[in-house]
Image (tube, rainbow, N blue to C red):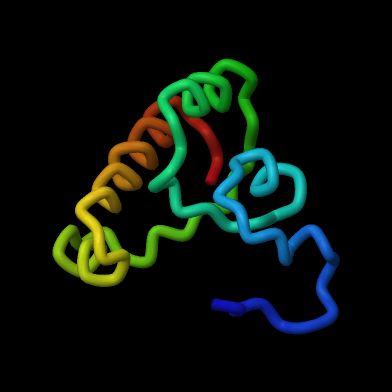
Amino acid sequence: MDQLPENLRPALYIKDDDFFQSYSNGNFITLTNITEKDLEKIIKFRIEPLHISLHSFNSSIRSLMFGSVKSERALKNFAMLDSNGIRT
């Protein structure tokens, strides 16, 4: 779904859940597809700030919105980043 307005910088239109795009270009990520290895890199190299879109902290609503229980992973990943002082 296209949710960004027209005439923004081209890098914002990349549809990718890539944490580096979040850091370097301001793209929002959901943290549902990020790997443990990626989390370790972010924490080790202090890759921040990250632009994160969680939509809801309510588990039932998140599962309904994303259509997957995998969305629970995002909350755990967010907590991991927060507990390690990564700015979001």
